[in-house]
Amino acid sequence: MNWVQSLPILFAMQGILCDYGCICNYRVELTVYSGMTTSSSTLGSMFEFDCKPLGPEIDDKGWKIIQFEHELGYVQIDPDVQIQTCQGEIPPGDVVVTSQTSSKPVTHTETTTAPIEKTSIAPSTPTPTTTATTTTASTAASQPSSVVTTIMLQSSSAVPTTTISLQPVVGVEYGCKAKHLHHAIVHYGQLFTIDQTCYELVHTQKTWTNAEHDCHHRGGHLVHIENEEQQNKIYDVVNQYHRHAVWIGLNDRQLEEHFQWTSGDALNYTHWFPGRKSPKPDSSHPEDCVAIKLGAHSGQWEDINCQFQHGYVCEYDATLQTPSSTPAPNVAVNSDGNIRLCSRRLNQYAHQHHTTVGEFGKSCYELLHQRITFSQAEVMCKKASGHLVHINDAAEQQYVQSFLHRHSPHTAIWTGFNDRHSEGHFHWTAGDPVSYTNWLTNNTHHNRLDCVILDPTQGGKWHDVSCSSSSLHQGFCEFPTAAAQVASVLVG
Image (cartoon, rainbow, N blue to C red; front, side, top):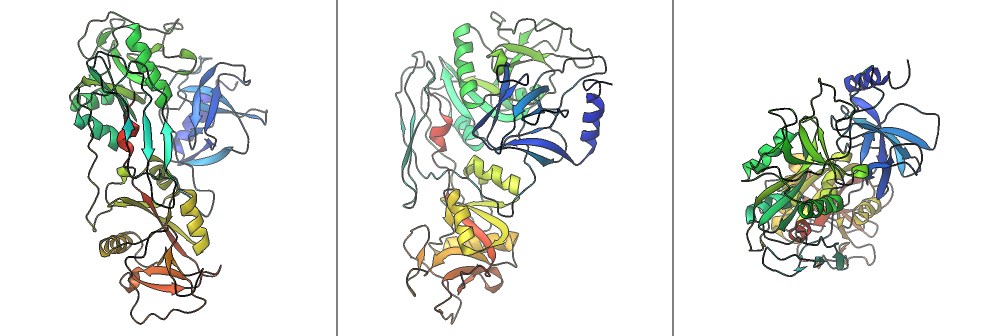
């Protein structure tokens, strides 16, 4: 039995287990090749913190085979590309489907799976933004736009102001309704318009049917493409912001090879990948739904199994008004808030490292479940562009106290309050002015007790403790909410 023939047995066994071997990437981007050489064609990319299931073992120590969007891909191994154990079952969007007689795996899909925690201290990486302004030009929907969108990220005094210039997508501009903007903000998508039509790139992976249902629920449908110009503009957005295959509305589910758009529009244009029907697809895995594929396909279309899971592009009627509203921040102290207003990376880290995230007012919070020193906790928060929590008023104090009662009622947390530099002169590590304190009654400050904890077992009161390596408590980080997401979801 050769390694291709052994694939069904190998992958069936992996599907039964609770955990599976995977490759996790910690580079900014890792190319996935079709062969074991960098001159091979590319299947796509793994981005930072992506994990993919392992394929068959090979002897070459510099390369590993992974299951990538229903194909076997090759990646180069280095210290930033690690073999780990991932939790749960292999994502259906990556598992290779094959048969005993097949010598070529079937194609397609993308999933990010969180690896099991390897270190004792788990960082997080939120985006330190509180406000945003977008510099652009508003023109009639029929006019192309080539303006570079510039996001001004203004954060707390401890984090410098940053300017990020996004690459322009020529011919794309704003013009989507407020409800579509809100959905894109909450789900980290991108919005753009071409002529009189609004489009939303949705990164959440769904089957073709569920993707169409999601678009229809918001008054649209999966995208239909009428000409080469429209195809190129949509491909540019997908390639720049998603970099994996996406569903479009074309399908032949009713009658084989009689393709139609879910929008009801006539089929006047196609952009098929050459040789898509050779070899003839396995009838047990019908290929009735169409996706724009990247990598070697360079945006060309493939009809694939409708049960595969991909991101997708929704199409809606456009409006010429540029939306500007954002979801309201949480002001309820007895709720964890809307963590979707926190950065995507913070939420990814929380899932990956089993930390707990909350949102209140203009801040997001992360409870690190390890007991560590004050300095270690501050370093972890600071590396993620935040600081240990700084409590500025009674409402925030009440929120933190309520949060701890829900998630860690018996364990004190480090705050950023300390007088390590000058005895009796307390300050926040974030640099905020001291406007509120909540000391334990009759708390006596001692010369060697320079760091401050908040203890939920004592009504959330504060008291100073040693900063030494023997003093261990849970870290509680604070970050600005991603209020600049309005700019980040608009493309053009």
